[in-house]
Length: 103
Image 1 (spheres, rainbow, N blue to C red):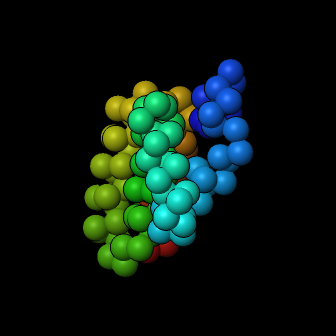
Image 2: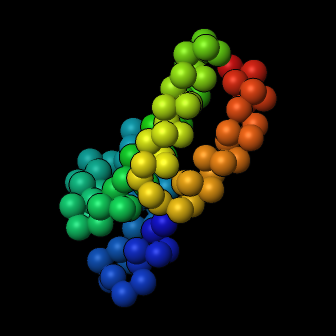
Image 3: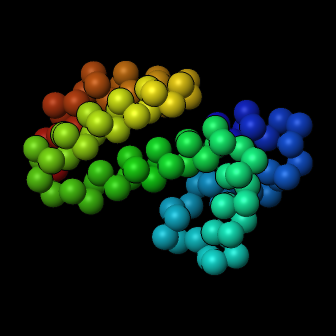
């Protein structure tokens, strides 16, 4: 997603790892830069938020609750209309029972 937004936008230069790092691992300066960039790139902001939400699912220990959160995340990802996430949702849905067993 960042690569698509990056084309022709020099303000995203050198921010690859800002978007790849977890929000909790960002320094205060990087977090401020991220907030600033997200104002100008709403699709990238949505993708970052979806990434963070997806990773939060793995903190849930109960399989029933994790399945509920994962299915609602899939709906949010589809509503975002971001094609890489839509493709990923079809993969997740195809393996949902196996994924939920990991919890």
